[in-house]
Image 1: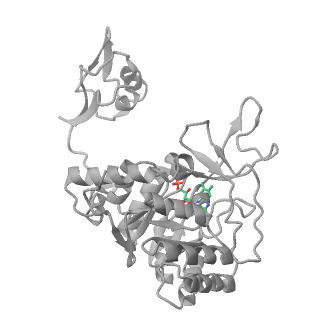
Image 2 (image 1 turned 60 degrees about the vertical axis):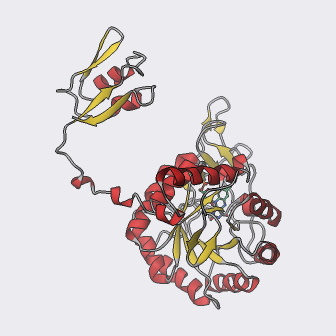
Amino acid sequence: MKLTHDLSVDFCGKHFINPFSIAASPPSDRRERIERAFEAGWAGAVFKTTSVEEEPVHLAYPIMSACAGRGLNAYGNIDLISERHINEICSDTRYLKERYPDRILIGSIMARNRGEWELLVHELEEAGIDMIECSMSCPQGDGSGVIPVTDPGMTKEVTGWIRDARRKDTPIIVKLTPMVANLTEIALAAKEGGADAVCAIDSVHGYCGIDLDTMLPKLSVGGKSTYCGISGPAVKPVALACVSELARTVGLPVAGVGGISTWEDAAEFLLLGAGTLQLCTAVMRNGFGIIAKLLHGLDGYMQEKGFERVSDMVGKCLDTFEDHEKLDRSAKRTAVRNPELCIGCGKCCTACQNNGYGAIRMEGKQPVINPDQCRGCGFCTLACPEEGCLTIQET
Ligand SMILES: Cc1cc2nc3c(=O)[nH]c(=O)nc-3n(C[C@H](O)[C@H](O)[C@H](O)COP(=O)(O)O)c2cc1C
């Protein structure tokens, strides 16, 4: 089925045929995988983070586990950067750029000192990379669970080294972790250092859990485990908070990543300020073919809402943000029940009696809301199993 819209976006002067790229991750760690991604319709790929030839990368297996159980929404990984060093990534870059000149290749780099950062930038530019993403945000793998760069001074300095190392105008993206007290401060430091864009978020520092039968870690490496990076749908709210904060405060384009699995997720990221999108876990679970649904879904939404270009969506909902103290307290709000949807389970009543204002009582199988007592806290809507049965309305 043909798309009705041109879904292309321009990001830092680069033309993406659509907003969707593969994030730095195992699906972007081999040229043949990126080839398959491009054949399927992905606009770009961020290579899995690479390093200088001398940097040892010793992986521990298994690398990834579901945090709670199969099919659930959080995944934890103890992956490291790529075992493939800069020379292989440059060889892949040359190969892919020749065959897919209309797709965007982003080199993701991590280094231990200024000389290494500079070398990585030189090599990537020489190979014809389109953009460079600086991985300063990985939550695992340094042995202590401590994030390498959460310091504004270091962020500015390292970004400056990378920027100064450039011999071409290759745009620099700084990838950020949400695990900082003040994200805007770190992003502004990256901007001062010369970043052209920021990317949020990397996976979130976490722990997969304990299997209660075996009493072993859910991500067990011979019975032991360590802290991991959480990804997948569970991190989406964290990513949306970061992306929207950055879009509102920093004045740089934002690449949105973290928990995007469907076109609806993608649309939310765009509306909250992401100029381009990256996916990892959804691709790892469901394959490169999900791009077709992402494109068609987004295309249909644009048709429905009257957006001509993807760029018209970017940041469209940022003006819905308000400081907590300025949120409207003047209107009277109450829970309203749709009797046609109500199954009489009484869960709303339990929630209201335990958490809310005691405004709902059961008359037989019928919940009855006392509007004078109800203050519209919304807890009943969460307890109700029937979507749309209880809503909070201004009265
Ligand atoms: C197995 C795995 C490996 C990853 N490797 C990298 C990496 O090398 N460099 C990097 O910047 N991010 C890496 N990430 C983080 C992803 O690029 C992405 O930021 C994160 O997973 C959140 O997106 P998602 O919810 O779509 O997976 C990795 C994630 C996973 C799950």
